[in-house]
Length: 355
Image 1 (spheres, helix red, strand yellow):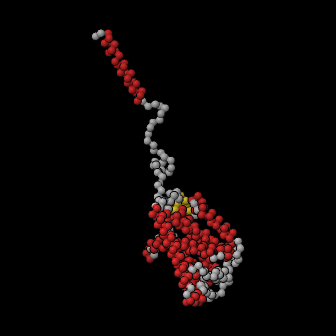
Image 2 (cartoon, one colour):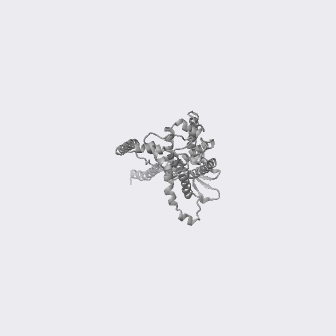
Image 3 (cartoon, helix red, strand yellow):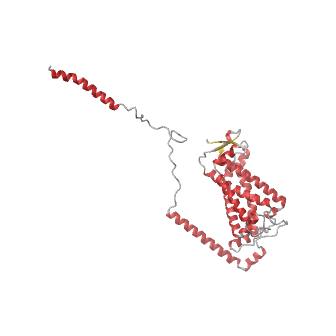
């Protein structure tokens, strides 16, 4: 073997060693670079899961739907106009003129009652308005709330956990019932029950007469300071003595206050009946409020507001400004009806938790 071969043989292991060291240097990670691992921690309540933003389910109406809505509104307008024209023509006949003369829309109550509205009645009206609006708002929220985030549990009754929204709804219901009971007691004590309780069968033909006059836009004489017309009387009677008790009874059946061990009572009054009635009753209250507000505005706005808010039978701005103040209070209550404000109040009566 020549000297050249010896040199090659000696250099071969050294070259391989250098190559290995170079490969190790390339494959070895740098100490300055952190190891790459899959991310397992995320911001939020569920740290090991990524929560995607929920897609909006609200869809804009299509052009055919929008056109159909406009056509439906136009059809309702035509029907309303035709009804007004028909009733006005009907009332022009002599026999209908005789009917209006015999039944002008109201009758004299069987028991004399002092005219006007006492201040306690104004306050009861305001509290009723304030509570019923928030009751409707919270009730609709209960129906649409799929996954509540805040719960309320009564002390000593862990199984009675309900959502904070439902607690707020039931708390408002309780206040509304108390206000209603006070109102009913006072109208019977003072004799003002005669205003809203029919005392003669004449209420029905007079109510029909008032309804026809409203539709014809030749409205009946407004004398609410002394006596409601028969249509108003029937509406108030149905609201106070039929719709309100039904709302209470159906709501109580669906609440946690219903006795769970009363099996026979539960069978006689199934919860499905209460659920089937409770929502339509709420719709009745909404319709009543819309009609009530519309008539207040269209039949002597300032005088009616003075009746309801200032206990005055005069056309002044006093009742209007009290009404504006009441709307401000209602707006504050509307925006305050959220967990940030409700949770501290609910903690006074139980435990508030996020789960």
